[in-house]
Image 1 (spheres, one colour):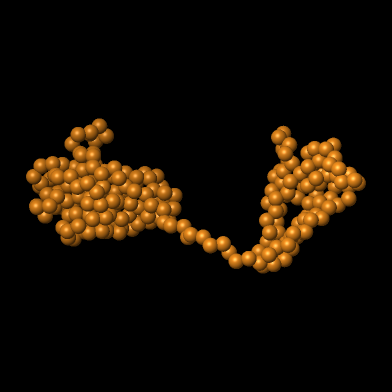
Image 2 (spheres, rainbow, N blue to C red):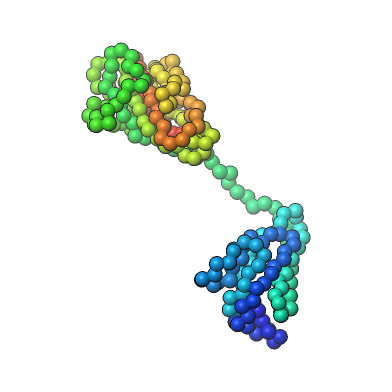
Length: 231
């Protein structure tokens, strides 16, 4: 929007209130370049600043047509701008993929000869008895027992927190159970490596995933592949 005189010359002193009207679309923003202006950036009115103002419009749907914008101010002739709206096919796009969160930092308990409780508590200052392990790197057990507990903490993406998701264990070795926030979520009946997909319930904040695994006595149990949560 540019205020001009009868000869088409820009008039920088025309700081007038302008009212806009639009058909065939919607006004989605207003501006004038004034760095100290407190006027609303939505609506249909804007004061000129040094004779200038800006209107941002969005064409409506429904195929071909016209978008008509008019501007009026006291003491000035109204102005009208008409833009043809063409019917065009939608642009090609790549559908969004699922958001995933890799669960990488795990703690592994010492081996036990009898089935331990999956709710076993690790002291906050315990930096030695439980190993730090990474998914995809199976560590031999500490001791002669066949049972181990693996645990990780994670804060899922917003979609998982609100709607739930799926936690995927690639090449999980050993038989046992998967627990999420103290509740058993799935069991694995075989010792051989297998990929498990387990429902991950919605919930806020930090979550705790615990694996209770038993080896077959010849091959160490553990995380043979990546673990990740899908929204």
